[in-house]
Length: 557
Image (tube, rainbow, N blue to C red):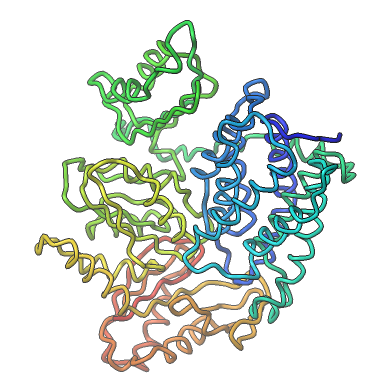
């Protein structure tokens, strides 16, 4: 097909085909990651983010023809689903593009080009220190080139063809822009993910033949099966946490005045005594209402909500069975200060709660929480100052974006620059509100984080060469404060080599070892004995963490 203008339905299809093409090539994008540790991999994060923009419409007939209406809903869906650095940047790219579509039914190729230029500013502005040789470069150069190639006769197809070809050229150059990419002879993973998205655009427009594409679309539209841990709630258990209830509803003209309807009406209903909803997230987009609430009475919720409209989708889950939920503290009393921390595994979450955290967001290397996960955690608390520990470099950007988006009056969100689980553990041991001074509390927490040497031990999932270290798939590798410092087929040797590289190790007094799910007692005892032989004065405190990806989290202070 040849498009001379772009409307809301075509925009949705572009993104849908782009999402499907990215999902089909997701593992290839993940494999390009330079870091040899299984993180919330780039391709996976980008897939989950862009899919969030598609799920705002449950049926094709619900998609507005107005570009402004469609893009606004999709942009918000991506933003709330964004996870990991690559996902947040992708969401910001679309946010910048979609802002220019406000109030517009369709755009010309020239107007589309201007929208992509606006996306450049939005994406670069979302990153504290933009790095060239990444998805930012690929998107920027492709957008600038495609705009420059426009003529009076250009179509939407022409724009995206030029955009795609320049994106591929820019992607090929990323290997020369970032030394770490050159060292490992790979191109940027985020840039590759973006190229696959634009390639999907061309699949929709018919400018690239793809015989297997329909099968990919069918697979992309399937919902993941819900796998419940049936042992998490037995016939003898008592329902304590209630049900996580979510729905998307379309307001009906026969029931309400859609233009004047205020979402606060629904929030008030959910807070009423017969529902007593908690962790309420509700927003209105045109005639669409999206709601998340925790309640003991999901049936009453659904019954009352039909006063206003009809459901497009519903989901009700016993929170004892949820795998990727926000773990909330039972105490909902008003507090001046509260702590939200990202935790990797149930036992680490329990430890953080014991040390004073008020709400836990499950996440870590293999699962990066979304911006919406952070917002839900904030809403679960009644506090004036919420202090957040992201505990992973790939989660930090999502945390910062959530703080910028959070709009509840009287609440400020403060992000601690903490990039590891062991540093957070040490900081929480120093948690002290007795000064009743926010700056003092934050200073103590940040100072503790900054003075902790954090070691993370895992198994390499790909061959790489980083900072002069040859890493082979299956090696034990140790990350010290974010940098890979040792790799060995012998785990204890890899850990001891890393410890020796810690600056001023002779002045460290306490070592906390958080050991994971697959570490047996003999291995743990052998490691402690080996460390004691080298550092007999070091006090070693073992803690069971149950984490899966990292065999050990180690903090020295």
